[in-house]
Image (cartoon, rainbow, N blue to C red; front, side, top):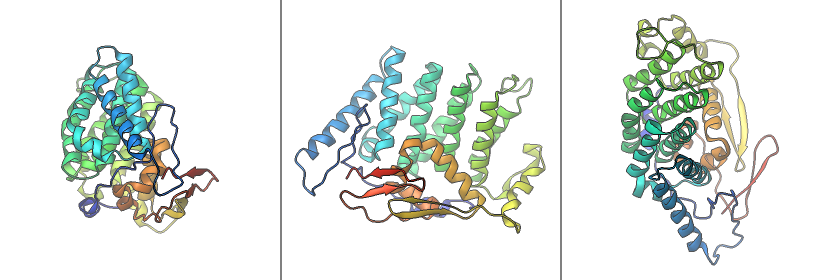
Length: 317
């Protein structure tokens, strides 16, 4: 798929979907008319909830911070929180980094996921670059302590996402790929513990590393720094005659298709990371529209969204 610089320049922020509820019960509000009494109250409730969650990240009790992070993740999955990010970007990033530095394994995993969602919500630009610059060192440090697989996997996934969105230069992407590589190939005497990584961690390393490789010009990589000649072969596979995967799924009545290995790797990785928020972000996130050259159909009130497996997702508009 190549470098995404042209895509990044064209990516634009979208307005939040005022009709999405972000309550902890994951309930949604369906509006059947163009004008619905109480819509302003719904938005106020959303803003109040996120502000309360942000305040809770200052609490000393770890379980309180964990619950707040889980609610923030749910809110960012359910709706593109551009207004909140515009006002509270620095505070949210700072508190999530504090959680990564000082929190339990569960809190680290939640904070890592929240930072990844923050990057995807902001899209390419100054904020995404700031996220990458501020997070690489804390993530690298956190990878050296307490080797719980869930924590390590979340940190690696976060690193891949923030690099994918905010990495403007090949050197930035290669630095993140090097961190991933070190997790799979720890050495005695290095800054990375030499303990053998778990299968779960290895799986995430391979997935995240491949995800970032799709953004690189294969010849821009220095083979000596990776110590394996097969990188070039992996990059060239897509350019040789042979099988190329073609995947298609329906989102909002429009087909999202992939025709290259790079697109398939990117789609699978982001779909896994976004989980239940994947469809919402594919509908409304301009950055993802640019990445996959996807143009969703205009949404109508009461519209229904279907995935290829027959899953129905009702619009919250």
